[in-house]
Length: 325
Ligand SMILES: NC(=O)c1ccc[n+]([C@@H]2O[C@H](COP(=O)([O-])OP(=O)(O)OC[C@H]3O[C@@H](n4cnc5c(N)ncnc54)[C@H](OP(=O)(O)O)[C@@H]3O)[C@@H](O)[C@H]2O)c1
Image (cartoon, rainbow, N blue to C red; front, side, top):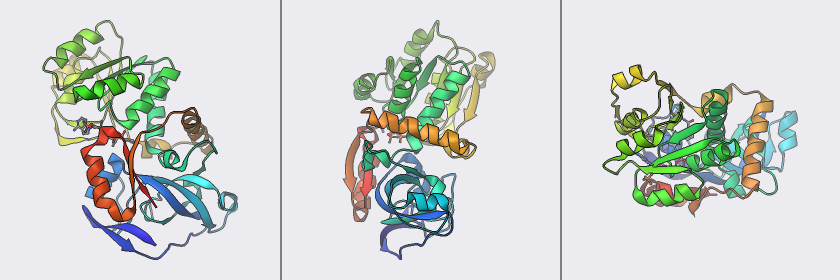
């Protein structure tokens, strides 16, 4: 089968390798689509939270059809079904014509959900759901997010609106503002403007504590934004789009009693019961069925991986780049 092989950090090759066989409780997925997400880019560098021995097929999520099972009740039930799937932590990933994964990592796609949209069912939508759930459970009635022109941020806006939670987005380019407002954000600010801190301080006067998921992580911008928020606000670091050291002024944290936490969907999802997992993915499929779509800027065959990765890295806010097998 055709596949991409990572043979060392950032060393990606187009290869022909044998089709893998599923063991008990596992299925063979004939892959249709798989997106390039920032987590895949991190995996390519060798700096992701999940490490696998080289050579390895990268790719975390995708969609396809179950063509064989290694035995077991649920595996048989999945046979010939169109599914969204996540790569096993033990085996190769989704950037190949076929992938073996655990049957429990596959969700049957509803008829109204296309296979390209369905290939992005897990990573971003489930993270967006978690942020909004956290806001509700911990009494935050407003969310502020950096990298607000991202696909994930637009999903947070969708779920926040459904739950009566307000949303302020922060982008880094002026031309990104209109798209985030069109997605339903209540307010959008541009961190490249010279006086954005004053603008934010003024904007947040009168607000109570805010949930602040941040995708940038490094540098000083995320912490300058934190210092503009009301006291008892909570920063949730879930991305490191900026890889330099985080530069924070400690007194902001102390005197405003801010909280800072890390968030990784992989850990959160691992603690869920099967019932919760199915209920969450049903909510996501309902969102996709109701007309919400992640913008896809282009699709490529695996052999064009260099073009695909270049296009995505240079134009992240334009939309997702997908591999079509
Ligand atoms: N922790 C978790 O469990 C988890 C789960 C899902 C997603 N994530 C994270 O969520 C973030 C968004 O993912 P996505 O798939 O929605 O991304 P996406 O749609 O590809 O968009 C990425 C966005 O980030 C912006 N960006 C890139 N580098 C930046 C920087 N240094 N400073 C500020 N903005 C920057 C881009 O803006 P430009 O166009 O200006 O470059 C773009 O708007 C990523 O960091 C991803 O790793 C984490």
